[in-house]
Length: 385
Image (tube, rainbow, N blue to C red):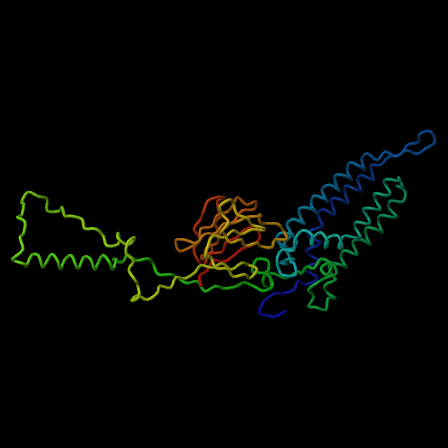
């Protein structure tokens, strides 16, 4: 990978450390509840048969299994949307898809399935022992199964050490098409534009608007003054007598020359054309789009009735963090009016000075050039070109 991208593959040791931190607590809880459940199994003889009471095993084992399953689902959702887990954050690493964005829930599930395949077999073995009530063989069967499953998980977590492509992928990453980067030693691609990296605009600071006199009004005023002066100095023209009691401040309002523009067009051949900087957005996937009309952004955006002329910008989102129609953009007043279309995960704006503000759903907010708009796990930069 080119050094200019500042991407650093995660060290196998950090990947193993993150996995241990993520799974230590649920593994301990499940093991303790399962062991307590097995310890609570009692047996009695009835009509020459041995009957086992497995109520404690079912209760405690079910609680442990339910907590572990809920933890797995929450962890997969978090990592799928951000590439981060509690262990990843503590170790300073992030998992991504092949383009450097959030890996998505499907890829995270496949990685976890491959890593925990040995533990899953141990759980299946425990279920078989309970169903057939082979409790006497529980310890000889489950102890080796758990050890082998744990060993397999450790081996998979360290498998990136044998990857010839710069330690980018372990066996589970190859199957799920994911990558893992060290965000403490290098750049975090998930938040900085993926593998290709961020794109820098050169924002233009437009000069402040200044009030200027209309050239038509100035010309008309000069003509009126000249006419008035000629009338005063013409001795042959009758002048109305002065009325001393009339208010001195009252003057007749002359029609403004600009009021007649609907009937007369003034050609501007002698004036140089005015260059206006077009506002543009740069999406975190590298797309550069000019804002020449209203824009709708989302996973699969569509306009309301009457919005047929808007520009639709679909954004790939494997983690499903953005809504179908997430944002509406409309250029005006030297910036862009951004409206969150009542999205599920909301939107926010980070100004050039680093101030982040959440957008109120359904309320247009004026965003100035140099700001970054965040929607779900995605973002774009507002600049001028």
